[in-house]
Amino acid sequence: MDDNLLYVIVNDEAVLEFDRGKPVPGHQRQYLDTMDSQMDQGIQLGKDFIKNPNPLQRSQFVANSLVNHLFKDDYSVAIAMCTYLAKRMPDLKQIKCKGEKGKEVSIELVFDRSYQQSQQEQTIQFHKPDRMH
Image 1 (cartoon, helix red, strand yellow):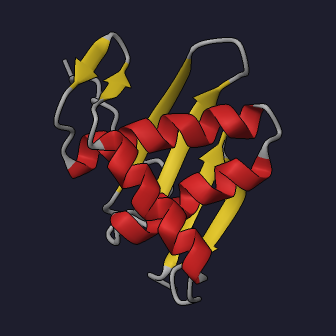
Image 2 (image 1 turned 180 degrees about the horizontal axis):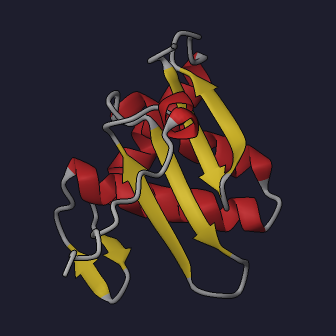
C-alpha cells in the first residue's frame, strides 16, 4: 500500500491520483507559493470570510476549488489544486466528493485511511436480536 498517493474521489470513483514521490517542477512550486500568498489575504469559506486561514481551512478552500474545476472539466487547474493539497497536507489521503455540478456537493478530507483501505472495508451491520419470551 502506497502512503505517497493522494486520491480525489467523486461519487465513489477515483478521478485523480497524485504521487507525492514525484518531484514538482519549479514553476509549479512557485504557483503553490503564489496560492499561499493570495490566501494570506483571506478566503471565503461558505458564508464566512476568514481573514487568517489555518492550514485546514486553506485545504478546505482549495478542495472546493478543485471540485469546482473538475465539474467544469478544467483539469489543469484541478491538478494544480490537487498538487497544492498533496504538498501542503502530507497526511491527507483522500478528497471525497459527493454530488453533481450545479447541485449541492459535499467534500470530505480524509486523513485516516487510504483509498485502497476504503475499498477493502466492508460495512458491518449489527442487528439487535429479538428477545426470547
